[in-house]
Length: 169
Image 1: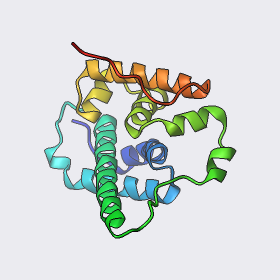
Image 2 (image 1 turned 180 degrees about the vertical axis):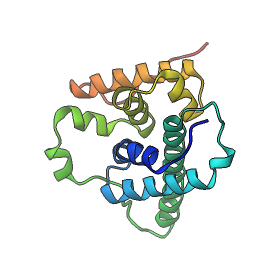
Image 3 (image 1 turned 90 degrees about the vertical axis):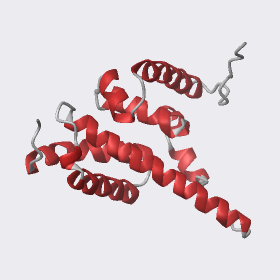
């Protein structure tokens, strides 16, 4: 069983922060997300599976906390819209113009696709570790990752941004 010590956390902090920043697109939100992740990890340390990888476990907590926050924000936006408030989640044109082509395409991907690309390509987690972190089957990780890479290529090349749907019979 991996011990949770100060040095282990210090080694993982830059990776956790980078992942949080890729999801939130905001330095302060990323810092808050990492802090919430560490608080959850410390409080749930005794419930952690001994055979699991610490890095994957922390990424899993961070991602789930991010998704929960997104759900809360959508519910709050729906409530605000009932009272006539504007949607606060739109990006400014200046941000879009200043971004480089590939980064712009990456930012336009859904959070789930960004998370997969970040965990595999940047953090170097194996498909198995990503499956464990996101609590989805490994085959699903591989197929979603393939679609995320294709979407990123399409966006980078300026092709259509709407995903094509398969017809199942």
